[in-house]
Amino acid sequence: MQERLYPSSVDEWDVETLEGLVEHSVAEDQYLEYKQYLRYPDHREPEPSKSEWRKDIEREFAAFANASGGVILFGMSDDIEYNPIEEPENEIGRHVTPYIKDCTPVPKIEVSNPLQPFSSDSGRILVAVRVYEAERKPISTSDSSFYVRINDQKHPMSREQIESMFIEADRRQQAIRSLEVEIARLRSVYKDQIEGLPDLSNVPPLSAVDESGIRNALQRNTYLFTNEDTESIVVRVMEILDEIASLKRLFEEGTRNMGRVSFRRYGDLNEHIQENLKSKTERLIELFEMLEDQTQISHPGRR
Image 1 (cartoon, rainbow, N blue to C red):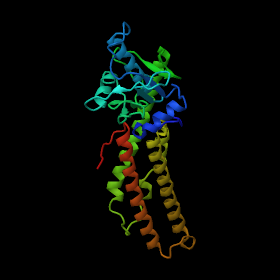
Image 2: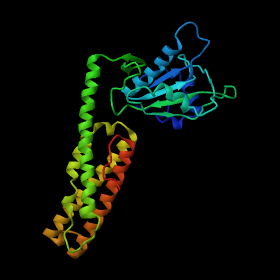
Image 3: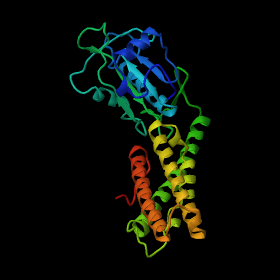
């Protein structure tokens, strides 16, 4: 999500966030939707019906997930006035789940803690729900409809938009598979060639880590760069791949001319390279485990 007057993570939302929205008259946009009610308001007559009202909420979630994600703030009117809802007796998330459980696939969401404005009566709150951009698009609603968020509205998707998303989904799955292959290969070579280092009777197995193949596979998975958390992991992986490439250049330079590296003996250089190759490969595996936990990348062979 772009830089806004509110945090992208609703865990960081507080009363000051709400006051800022009102004070600055922050209107609905591509990433923000206001809803007065979390549950169907029985006093509304005669339209919409309860089923239509629930479908409308479900479509909001699907539309955000099919676009770039966003936040739905329950308890705020379209004209940016508080309309606090009665705080549920049980966990708030249980009142949100029914709106997404019949979507295919189910969108990923994050529910804030109860947010009570300074002007609100005790027991009445607002709730912010972050809808993450879907990793597998398009997401359909319970009636097999497809919606996407455009500016401050949800819109039915055209056949061309739906087909395009399915094509993109296939491309993404192929890219994910290529990365899964590289991660599995890294785990295998670590176990077979790197885990037992240092072994000074042999040269460092520098060709075991295919940093070029891993780098290319990551770059194909462009969606990893659209999320702050996954992007930070990928950036660190790239840095370690650069460090491994530097180890290779250092060893090649040392074997050609020890006088051009800062080691007095070949054995010292060999030990340095092997110890660093092992520690950096272990760090790569740790980072990929973090990436697997946050994405749909599978983890065969994981320790």
